[in-house]
Length: 407
Image (cartoon, rainbow, N blue to C red):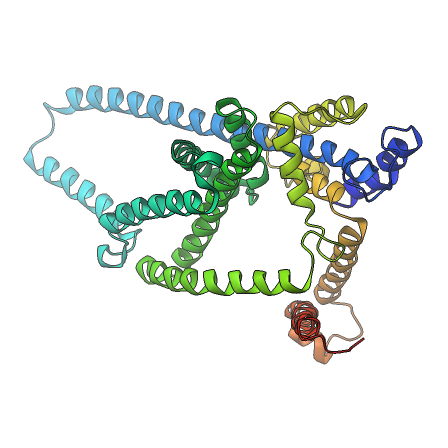
């Protein structure tokens, strides 16, 4: 993110402004350098997301092919072995092998949770059908059939199902769910099927991104519960309750914010929304800013190659590959304002220093009260920052809504 911030805001933004490619004010999305470098960020996100998904897909295909070849070879060898030993084995040997097979099957079954703790298949099927119907009805009521036809909504849901699988695979292997890139892929497909419909394009991308995001979150939740020997059915009910209440809380919070602040506005610029809008315009035939296409191609190719080097050259955490930047993080550093990235860098440096301090056995303050708490202390401090800002943001917003004079 810091590298993207430096290159995007420290090099490319001044270059575009001085060269006359983005002559407007820096913060202007249409004529300023902020909107100009946004396209480069979008190119990097799409490139890394697509290449990463392809790498994951190819790896999965290789695993499947190797597994089938191994099973075929194993079956052939077992058949030959059985033919050679069939004349030498008696019924006692057969009983012993059957006992071993039953024991292995029992051990495999014990690795999973009991049947009574699993979510029933009928509940999953009914829930999926109900969710699809609710999505179609809600979008039809909000946008109407003229903006988003029912068939296009259903097709977007199908896109979301397939792309969610790729998102979960990427998240499970790399700890990164490229939902932004997944949404852009859906936008491209929607642009081909329904050209010229910018709003429908945004809706299709939003459905795909939401599906991939929720699928990834559920996968992480269920994996955590599995490690803790928690009941998946209990987690499922808890998620249903939380989703029901959060839908009202999130909607109420949004309505409260929009009554006080302008969204997007100076306080909440919502940069990602501009990325989505620009992508929708691009796939529907709008022109790019001057000379930005060359930079998009260059950065997209660069980070596509870096993904291949990082993902196919051995463990990424070892050797020099750990210093290869992630394209998504690099792109975030470009389209977010520098204040956002620099605050994260400062927090990261403080956390890194504290971890080294806690791990150092030669520290003169070995028995200090804060060091005894260990690395949890810095999390507590960070939680205090988040809680304080969040709490007083709500207080400040209420004062604005009630028109109470305050600083």
